[in-house]
Length: 265
Image (cartoon, rainbow, N blue to C red):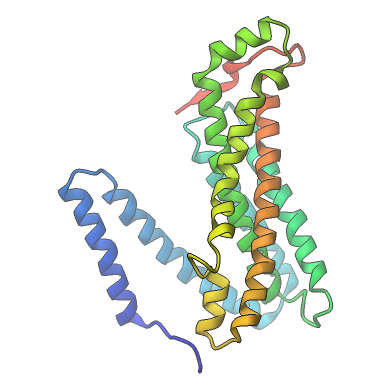
C-alpha cells in the first residue's frame, strides 16, 4: 500500500464542504462565513507555500535553512497568540510574554524529543526537526492563547473582587490564584480531551496518517503515544509560564492591581 493520494479533484470536493458551511452561516446570519472563508484560503496558501519551501530544504538538508524556518515559525506563533487576545498588555511586552511562554515550552520539549530519538542516524535532519518542532509549537500556541484570553478576561471582569482581597492584606498570588487555576485548566483542556479520547473516540493525526500510509498499527500507536505525551508537556509548560507572567505583569511590587497596563481592542 502506497497510501492515499489527494489530488485537485479530491481537494475541490473538500473545499465544496467549506463553501456549504459558509453559505449556511450567511443564510442563518451566524456571522462566521467570512472567518471560515478567510481561514480556509489562508490555510491553503500557507500549506502549499510551506510544502514548496520544505521540499527545497529537505532536498538540500541545510541546517541553517532549518534554523531560519524554526525562528519564522516561532515568531508567527508569538504574533498569533498576542493578536488573539481581546484584552492585552500595552506595548511590546504583550508579544514578549507570548513569545517567552510559547517558545519556552516548545523548545524545552522539542529538545527533549530530539534527544530521545538521538539514536537515529538522521535525527538532526530537517525532515525530523521541523515537523517535530511544528507539531509541538502548534499545541503550545493554542493552549497559551486560550489560557491568556481566559485569564485576561477574568481579571478584567473581576477587578473589584481582586482589589477587595488585596485591600484585606492578601498577596497578588493569593488574590489571583483561583483565576490562574481556571486559566491553566482552560488552556490544557483541549490536549487533555485529546489524550482521554485517543484510541476510543478518535484516531489522532499522526497515527491515522501512518496507518493510511501503510504502517503497522502498533508502531503507529507508539508514535502517537510519544507525540501526545510531548504535546501535553509542552501545552502545560507554556500555559503555566504564560499565566504566571500575565499575573506578574498585571500587578506591581506593592501587590497592587495594574489594569492600566491593559490595552483593550
